[in-house]
Structure formats: C-alpha cells, structure tokens
Length: 298
Image 1 (tube, rainbow, N blue to C red):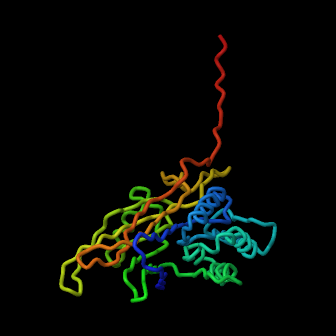
Image 2 (image 1 turned 180 degrees about the vertical axis):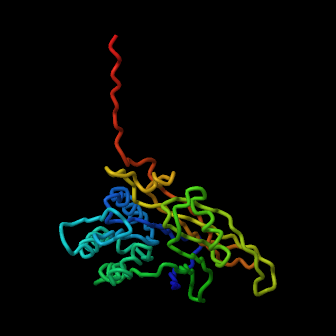
Image 3 (image 1 turned 30 degrees about the vertical axis):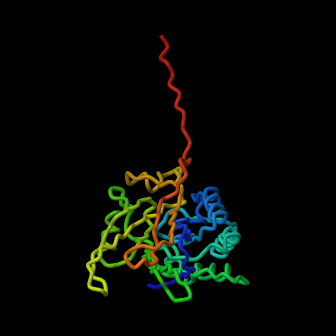
C-alpha cells in the first residue's frame, strides 16, 4: 500500500476536476474503446485529471488456465508487447491529464505468472521526455489532494482507492464492500472498482474528537466505478454476467469536483466535493435473432 499527495494552489472558487476510471480491460475484444475515447477526450477538453483504478489491462493469454478464451490483439507471439504498445498509443494523447495508474487483479496476475510489471512499464513509456509524470501505484492506495499557499498546507481531501475483491455481488452491487472498508479507514472518499457495477453512497459519516477537544462528525462518501467491458455472447456459451443473473454495467467513469471554499468559525479553507457517475445511455452487446413462425396449412 502506498500514499500519494497531489498539491494545488489554494484559491477560493478554484475547482480541482478529477475523473475516476477503472476496469477498462483495454486489450479485450469486449472493450468499448469508442466510448472510452469519447470520455477521455471530454476530460482533456475539460481540464479534468484522470486516475485509473486497476484492470487497465485485460491480458488474458494463451496459457491462462482460469479463463477459457484468450484475448489476442495481434498475430504475434509477443502478446504482452503488443498489448502494451496498443495501450500506450491510445493513452499518449492524454498523458498531460493522467495522474495515476492503480493496479487491478489482471495486472497482479501478469506479475505473478509472467514476472512482468506491464503497468510500471506503461508509466515509464508515458513519462519519457515529459515534464508531467504519471504515477504508478499498488492494488490499494491513499490519494491526498492538498491546497496550499505561501503560508503552507491549508486543507486536504483524502481518497482510499482499492481495486476491489470478490465476486460480482449482483444483490448489493458492492455496498457491503463499502461497509467492510469504511470500518478501517478515515478518509473523505472510498473508491473501488472490480465488480463492473456503478454505485455511489453519498453519506457514510464517522465521528471523532479533534485536537481542540471538540466532537466532530465527518462525512465519507463511497463510489464504485463501472467497466468499459461491454460483454458479449459467444457461440458455445453465454457471457459471464448472464450465467450469474447479473448484467454488464454501462461504460462510464466517476466525476469528482473538489471546490475550494472557506467555512467555519475560523474561516478556514475546505474542499467541497461534488461526485457523480457519467455513463452512456445504452450499449449494444448482442443482435436480435428473428424466429419465423409458419402458420399451419388448413
């Protein structure tokens, strides 16, 4: 687990715009790349900083015994090279806006079975010759956004980013994961992915006593960001989500706006968050099959 700090100048009315992406599975044939590009173009135009929360790679290879269908993007034996090059070329135009790459179970699997850290390699490629540096994190990370001026650091907004674990949780969509994590972390936002669902818990407060001896109640929010893996039905079997009474979430990302304001009896700086999930209205994952019914001849 690592902790990272991103610093901005404190100015009342300034808004730090963030985009939370996860579970892109870029090199999968199911990846909704058209929508992903549309959303990344929006972030670039909007001046919105981009964070990835794991499973940017899919990387299901020929020797993957757990999953039945390998996802091959090139006619080459050097599959990881091809996947890495493809993702790099796709993300290169957005390098100036990408802050962070977090790991998911797919990146961890590549390290475990292939001994290669493709996520760190991607960060290195994106950073070559660039003043702005993309940071590469772990499976779970603390992300602190800090406002400061010449007098020092004035306020913080803390995110606990965890890729997620377990099955798809169709009944709760991951709400139980929020409760498990919230018991152990004191942050402003808990961010998970992994289950390909989208969900926001706007109020998950925690009580404490501050250094002045006052009892304070701080609100925590939770967000689960969806996938860009649209799902499909293959000839000899149904798609994974269909087998478990579930569905594939619409392609989308989390929008987090942190507005700097002054508040309280000390007129101190604070970050005021506004969070939502942006998705497309619909996606095609299959074709309608027409059945012709013959009328009985009389």
